[in-house]
Image (cartoon, rainbow, N blue to C red; front, side):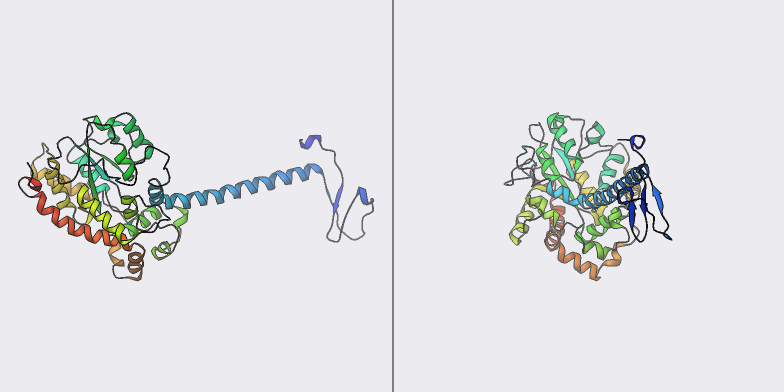
Length: 358
């Protein structure tokens, strides 16, 4: 019904009372009256509904942004546990079975996979691989493997067998392993680690710099006390642990075993040495002379460096550092083991041949 179809009916409103034609036509002396038509009522109703819709949308968008902010890590974790009916997800028994053992050398035609860890500055290594070594990723071939859909396409199109692809990358570890199914090549797992506290700090300030409303006026201490943080998620992903599942010391031991067996570990705090190991392990070559390659790597690492508003080193030894260590205690244990594994793999990679294998 439109306003034009409504009959005008007098409605008298006052501070002291309300009268209309059904109550008689008398108006109380000395009381100011206002005549309102049904057209006015209709217009006010429409306006109120519009305001309500706008406010609902606004609060909805704020909630979506809050969820989006948290999903940087939590959606990755959920992806390994909430799709049990989806054949795209591996069983929990051996989530890394599609990656060849790191000591099985040489890698031959195996396809390197870079596990992207939010906040761990993994993009530095990807940048150098592309810019300095001229390597081609799956994304360069038109498939964005940073998404679950991209990994699915990679598997359905059997792109793992496409020799044009030199490597692929994704935060979805288990789904990436599944994408290797049916192809003519195995995968080789590459993981760049950073201290979990530094990782949380980098992720927080990175998201805050992107303007997420959930992080507006939030300090790092506030973040650690919020529901936005997903704790121990590297350990969770390695073992397919859901967000509501408890992690034990036995889980950490199992995660250590998986990394020791399957992963070529790198350290974000020692990028140059990590890159040297990648070059030697995968036998990467370039037409550029050593001096130019070194300059390219140095420049690339600087260009791809995460720019933050605050220096994470300022938080070492602070209450926030202690809080983050407690929240991510199992990931901290895992990182401390990775530091030991980095030293051990260094000795093995520089053997002639690496790992003592022909």
